Image (tube, rainbow, N blue to C red; front, top):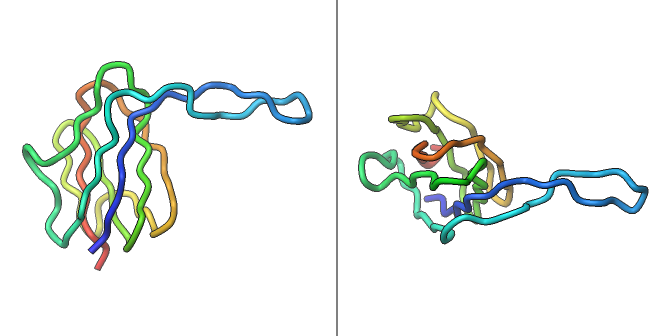
Length: 106
């Protein structure tokens, strides 16, 4: 079983030591959500929904490996979605109302 955290964010440009810029988290919208992901995809009312103002869902898998899908009515599966390995984070572009679905990689 995978566990993960979802944060809704925007990105900004931040200074680097050599004067360049890089994407950094500029703002967080709402509260972070934690999920225990099983072999059954999150569906219907159990899916997180992007709030107004958020441009990205930042998904951090804290244990196990998860697959993430997104859209108007997504269902993550073993063959549909983005693999997010344990210990990693991914940024997924979203707009208000976009839903996420997760399933454990088996």
